Each structure stands twice: as C-alpha cells, then as structure tokens.
Length: 533
Ligand code: ADP
Image (cartoon, rainbow, N blue to C red):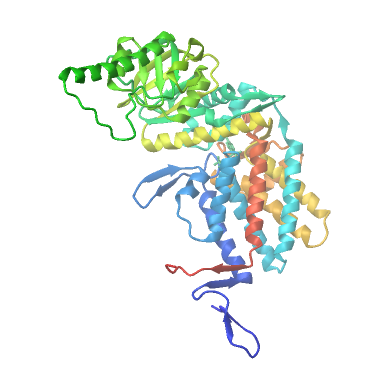
C-alpha cells in the first residue's frame, strides 16, 4: 500500500517496510467487527442447556467434543487479530471466574453488531465506546441491586449453583451427584479469614480416567496418585496409615566426578556392597523408627531400600510430583521432610486408608479418609476419553462457580432473567440521557437482551414472541423470569432452582464490554508482511 510519504520538493521517505499492509477507517472497523462477530456466531448455538456441542478436529486428527466456549475457542486456529481478541477474552474470563465464557463472547459479538449499526449511521465510535462503558456500569449496578445474598457455606444452595453450571454440559444427567461432590470439595478446602472465605482451587485435584460411567465419579477425602506401589512385596492396603512425606532419595548418591575404586581382593567388593546395603537399611530404619507405615517419596527409592521397606511392612510410592507432595501434606497433615535424620513421629500424617487399586489397566494409590483434609480429589470417570475430558471441564467450571459464590456470596437467577431485567432498566435509563449517548445506551440494552434470546433460540423458541413475553414479565421488576429452556417457555426460574454467581455475570459484562470497546477504538490495522525476516 502507501508506505511512502513525500515532503514537498523532497525525495520520498519510506515509512513502513515494503509489503506492510494498511487498512484504515471504516474499512478497518468493519473488518474487525465482522471477524469478531464470526467468532460469536460460532459459539452462540452452544449457549445454555439446549446449546449444541461442537466437534473440533485438530491438524493431527484428534477430536474434541465440547460445549464450553473457552475450549471451543482455544482449539480453533484463529487468524484475524480481532478474532484473536475474542478468543483472549474468553480465556481471561475462564481464568478469572471459570464460567460464563460462552456468554461473554456472545455478548461481545452482539454489542459489536449494535455498534456497527450506529457507526453506519455516522455516530462516531468514541461516542459509542463512552456510551457502552456507562451502560455497562449501569447494568452491573442493576445486577448488584437485584442480587440475593446467600450463606456461603449452605451446601444445598451451593449445589444449585453447581447444577446450573453443569446443566448445559454433557454431564447434566448426573449433575446432582457431581454437584454434591463439587460442593464438598470446595467447602473442604475453603479457608476462613475474617468473615470471608478464600478458596484455592489448586487444592482440589481433579483426576480423570476413561472407563466406567460418569456416575462412577468419586469424591475422595484425600489424594489420588497415578502411581503404583513400588515393590511387589509391599502391603497394598494399610488402614490407619501413618504417612511420611519425604523429599529425599532413598538411594546412595553417586559422586559428581567419576571416581575409581581399586579393589585388590574380592572380599573388598563384597564389603563395598555390604556398606551400601547398610546405609540404605539405616535410611529405612529411620522411617520405621518414626512409626511410619506408608512412605510417599518425591525422589527415587533404590531396589535394596525397597526390599527393606517391604520387609518392614511399609507401603511406598516413589517419584511423586512436587505439587502432589504439597497436596498430600495439606490432606494428611504430614510435614514434607528434606532430610531423613529430621523425621520424627510428629511429622507423620494420617489417613484412615491408603490402598493401591486398579483403575482400568493402571494401578493407582488412594490416600483417603483423611481427617479434615485441606486438599481433596475428584476422580472423574466416563465411558470414553472424550466423555471424561468434557466431564472434567464441566467439573472444573462447576468448582469455579461454587468458589465464586463461597468467596462472594451473591447470586442471581439464571436463564437470562437478570439480563432481561437489566436490559429493561437500561432502556428506562437511556431515555433520561440526551444526544447520541442515548443511542449507544439503547443499543447496549439490546445487546444484553441477546443472552436470553440466544438461550430461547437454542431451545427452539420463537425469538420475537419470547422477547415480547420476557419484556412484559420483566416489567414487574422481578428478576426471576427467564427462559425455561427445558420446557420451551418464559417462566419463573427461581422456582426451578436455576441460580448463578453474581461474580460471573459481572465479569461477563465487564469483559465483553472491554473487548467490544477495544475493537471499536481501532481505526487502522497495520499488518507486517508475512516475509521470513
Ligand atoms: P457459559 O459458558 O456462558 O456458562 P453455558 O452454555 O454454560 O455458557 O450457558 C449458561 C447459560 O445457561 C446461563 O445464562 C444460565 O443461566 C443458563 N442456564 C443454565 N441452566 C439453565 C436452565 N436449566 N434453564 C435455563 N437456563 C439455564
């Protein structure tokens, strides 16, 4: 394109490298909006319990089947920079609140579509951006007003949150059991500070194994290790386990430099071996003397040491990941020891049962029935690898939704009810504004109404009829009328126990508005050429 500038009477100066492309003004805006809208279109049909799944095939032919917005966008290879921004917001929402990813992208797409209508009518993008920002704040204020405060440790209520999160996923049929497990897991690791709770979801270990059915998924008051007991002669089941967590090798350290030992007499060789054995036995004796009957080791365990451990009736597992050692410590109350000389009975942890079990073709060690564990596990099962993968994602989303409520105990009714009311309130507020800001605020109200309408469309309902019904129901001022997708009508969803965290809805609006505004503010795309340098 035009990479040169010409000062009057002078030689041309090259500003941009040859091959650089420039797209300006309206054209740049339109391209960006179209790209972002395309992304939103892809996930729109996945929104809600009646949303469809996507089958994603990567370049190696691996197949992923999912309904999760963030996963869909992660898997597809997006080229356009504006489309990439949409993928990024879904990722950021996934990291922040873990749920609401599809809604965010659908909302951002819809806001851009409305913005385009205004830009076509010659409203300047900055006016749209300002109007959208104010409207987003207003929408969030409305949601805060209508949110309900709940008891952050009310198991029954939290279970409703988990079930709503899983309602749109493949696991919906088993969501009752899964929801209870998710709630137990989150509450087990929740820590109170002041009058608030903090949940570190890293303390919930979600393991998965294809085989069985989703109903075989188990909650474990402790940790599952995808490792086997290290020696055939060791016990495979220990009740009232006293557990030593050791971050030191039960091996004779080899010297860094290559050393040479000259042996003149065969007995010396034997002595040498005997000495090694003695050292290894001394290590095992220290563990036994502390009273441990289970050894969980982060490093290696020599064959000879294994033999002595087996003789002492100690169950041992080696080469455990550092992150698992930390979780084991929180679950059993044991202290991780770096030097065997330090090990005392006080450092041992407790689990009612440590057992090696067959999980399909593998052998895994279960450290379970810990007393008051501060780290727990969920072992997700499902008929095939694709099913467990999707089930694991759904469990992750549900864990995050429950965590959101435990940490910030405000909820809203789901099914698009709060969006419908917020859109109504925004329209009333827009009428009080003057000038072009009013137009932007009205468009924002339309945009936010897309969420209930997309849910309705995916449930096979007529969008126009639904919109009229929803508006009339919402005009009562109650944020409980949304899309009952399973029965295909507008209904009171509080009565159906469909609740969602306020934190998720706030994040959805914030992230979608931010992405839409960022894309709207771009009036020039300067793309480097795809040359090698
Ligand atoms: P996201 O990735 O945005 O969470 P989902 O596909 O999980 O997208 O859909 C979430 C939407 O589905 C939310 O608006 C939620 O309120 C709604 N929803 C969930 N369960 C139900 C239900 N049983 N009836 C109506 N709407 C529901």
